[in-house]
Length: 447
Image 1 (cartoon, rainbow, N blue to C red):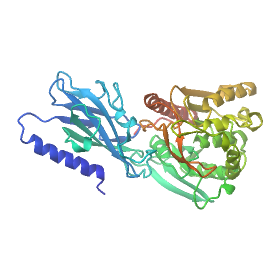
Image 2 (tube, helix red, strand yellow; image 1 turned 120 degrees about the vertical axis):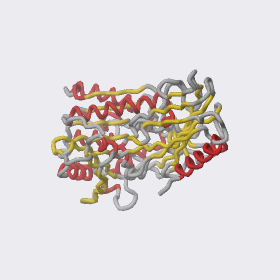
Image 3 (cartoon, rainbow, N blue to C red; image 1 turned 90 degrees about the vertical axis):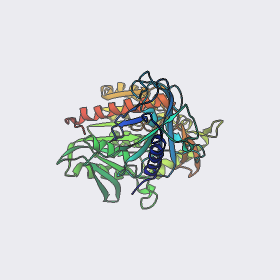
Image 4 (cartoon, rainbow, N blue to C red; image 1 turned 135 degrees about the horizontal axis):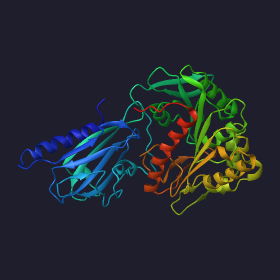
């Protein structure tokens, strides 16, 4: 159907037509390329036909799948040719500064008057993220909806490349979605585990499939038909076997990728499971201090027993990291010395959810003693927070969250500063893809 973004841009373009039709000078033009691309692909914008040295504001607007509006904007001055070019000219202010054309995405924030504590996540990955980009006269910071832009363009950002197939997995009580790249296959496989927010989170798997991996997003904190008491090592082993036995997947070219709780599960499974034997694994913002060696119900009960260690900052945001630093460490750690495959750890040093950096240092020492330190690669990003997502995703320092262990609704402090966090996401994604290709021994495919 026709989206809200389309209507806004149609109105803007109609207003532009009426305003410039009465003027003798050439109207400003805005080009955004590519008009359609993957979310991890950079776009470039160019504004032409401006007067020299004119102050203008580049503004992006997106309506999320949750029907909230997000925006970003940068302040520019046209050059002697009357142009503004994203990859050449600096933003002098706004939600981002510097030569940062992708700042129109990674610095997005809810528009004034929005609900508090929002997080932008793509739920319907078969539809694109539509972003309306406009150029306004002057350096504006608010009131964009009351102004008529000089020019407007819409760009589509996709998680699924053309030809990627989406397959529902409902087998042996396993709940997930398998994304298959275009072509006849077979492909290297990835088991994709998100964190304690729960639900079936598909967008990272869709993007991995767009880069040539058969990626299965696994739901393991389902709200209805899957009891936490029944979710233990066997659940993840069954999911791994479903992926491994799929006819479009290379059986001996498998990886596990986890974030937060998904990383803790990954570390536990590759250390102890006799079934989950991947060729490599990636753990984003994880820790070995939280072994998942029982059911998830028992795991969260253990977390609940230490919930008094959670602390709150002056903004009433919960700092989760202290809970894990208070755990009785030595006996509870995952024995990462047992890991026999290459392991990539991706961490931000301002992670306020887990002591990921401290855990990585301790894991390195444990693996050094066990003789498998050569399998470990660590990426640590200054001033990056916990939620290291695919490139150009907006940064969220704190958002609404439901604690699984207490069922309490809180504002969770994730950490990070916007610009360095954006750098971490872009750099980490490139290195994650390179790591997976290196160890899954497949030719790189581009779309």
